[in-house]
Amino acid sequence: WDPDPRNIKEINGFQVSAIDPDGDKLIYKLEGAPSGMAISSSGVLSYTGSEEEPGGQYTIGVIAEDPQKDQVKWQFSISLSAGSAAKK
Image (spheres, rainbow, N blue to C red):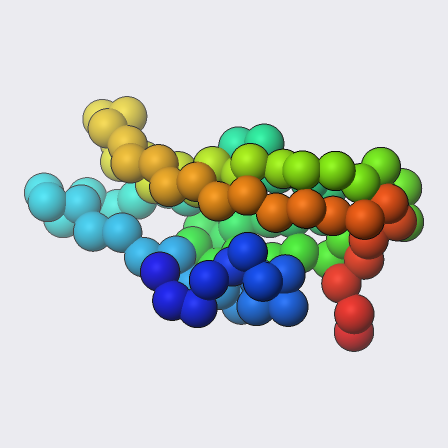
C-alpha cells in the first residue's frame, strides 16, 4: 500500500492489489467514500471531488471480494474541506 492514499493528491490512479488464494477473480468496491470517489473493476482508485462536498472526516473501506463472497477490507481515513474537488 504505497504510496499512502491519505495524501489526496495520490488517490487518482492508486492501484489497490489483492490476490485470491484460489485464483478467483476479485471484485473491488468502496464503503463510506465521499461523492466523486470510485474504484474500477481492476482496483484503481479515482477521486474527482464535488462542489457540493459538505466536508469532514471519512473512513473509507476498500473491499476485495471473490465470487463466494469471501472478502478482505482495508480502511483509510481522509479529511476533506467543504467544496473539495480534485485539481485538474
